[in-house]
Amino acid sequence: MDKQNISVGLDIGTTKIVAMIGRKNEYDKVEILGLGKAKSMGVHRGVVNNITQTIQSIQQAVQEAEAAASEKIEEVTVGIAGQHIRSLQHSDYITRPNSDIVIDEDDIDRLINQVHKLVMLPGEEIIHVLPQEFKIDGQAEITEPIGMYGGRLEANFHVVVGQVSSIRNIGRCIKSSGLELEGITLEPLASANAVLSREEKEAGVALIDIGGGTTDLAVFKDGIIRHTAVIPFGGNVITEDIKEGCSIIEKQAELLKVKFGSAWPGENKDNEIVSIPGLRGREPKEITLKNLSKIIHARVVEIIEQVFVEIKNYGHEEQKKKLIGGIVLTGGGSQLKHLKQLVEYITGMDTRIGYPNEHLAGDSDEDIASPLYATAVGLVMDGLKRQERKKAEQIEEEFVIENEVEQIEEPEVEVKVEEPIKERRSFLDKLTERVKDFLDNAE
Image: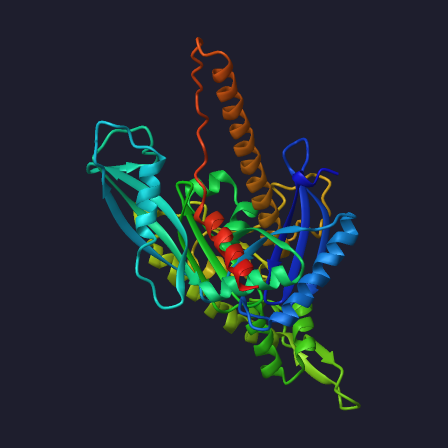
């Protein structure tokens, strides 16, 4: 099979590590060839805190995916998240030396590079610089300035910041697992690509990805990402609360949450009781489902309220920033019973559960189309997109070289080549290269 058309997404989460192998089929949909998952041992709230255990978990997930797909994995696209990620809004401008020449990519790159000179806290680095809209000589609301005339080019940026050491640690785990780093993607962006439609991103939508250790938020409006945030709480905190509140062990608490848990206490009758076997010959414990859902409800309300504060920070109450698409819930935590109703009750916004089946091939396994794997599907899609971009660049280079050769052979005929518009390399591509360089030099 052609290695070029295969992409591998590696989702390093707090509860599980997922390796997913996929390729594009003839209908331009993603076909999942293999899936491997392992319990995540060395990750806390999205940040690696034990390199050895994380490497073991990655290798286990990768081997499982390789066996399922009968493919050897060499390169992976990895997601970054964690409580160290924060975002800010920033405006910047450049003055162009000659306003009689149209604005080109170099001008925009110069403006973006200027944003990278922002002074950050020690150990922090800018991961993502996302232009929102541009202004040329005071004329606002320009989405694509390339090809226009103007002297002063300014823009509003959404800047995502993270801790370099955390990103390098992920890079180290991947390299030590015998894999190459193909690309780095922000996890909320990967999940958004997998579960949101273009119409929703245009209309305005908030994606809430409830993982084990963190809850990620990404707000889109007019097709552009407007706000991102990572809240350092997730499904694990709910399990912890059940464990403490019912005085049972973690394994039992997790089972209770998944099987009988509900975010809405009114649903359960007082006489509904679950009996849990006691430890080592002790009496079994009886827990009412009403109490269980009260414990879950209290923590879920806290998580949703924190997310809602972030949505308010974006300014969704302003007419121009209204989120018509409402809220989309995804991630493993979104499978909690009656969560959709609770989110609608707290926020007053339309809510749906996001399944990553829009971009998947029709015959995909039902398990893969679960919100649990939204990030992994998004990472596979991102890897495929990156490969297409590389392929396009190679074809373009060959095209230019061929034309140069022709011009040398036939000097009297002037061949004018229309240059294809190159897609601007995202800063994450440059960051990937820098992480690779760092790891190579650190050997």
